[in-house]
Length: 101
Image 1: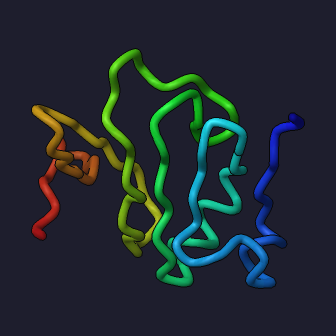
Image 2: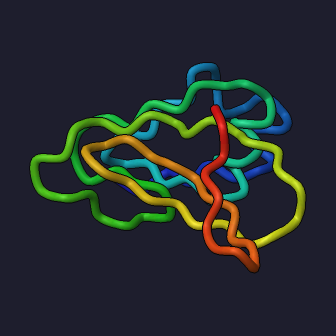
């Protein structure tokens, strides 16, 4: 069976579904993930080899959830992930400044 590819156009035109399910025979482009987030659509990664852009998931990894879209001003940012929790810092001349939730 050929792998299915979900593109930005599929999401924009409503052909990908809601929620969008990315299973072992499906790949999804980064632009499609961005569009889904912008439209407030859920993306569900099923167990198996499914992953964004065909990248293999870690062995035994739990299904992934879509990340929230955050609108920030232009600049340089640092994202730190510890124990599954992401923290975002804006990089300034005085050093990293944590963003408030």
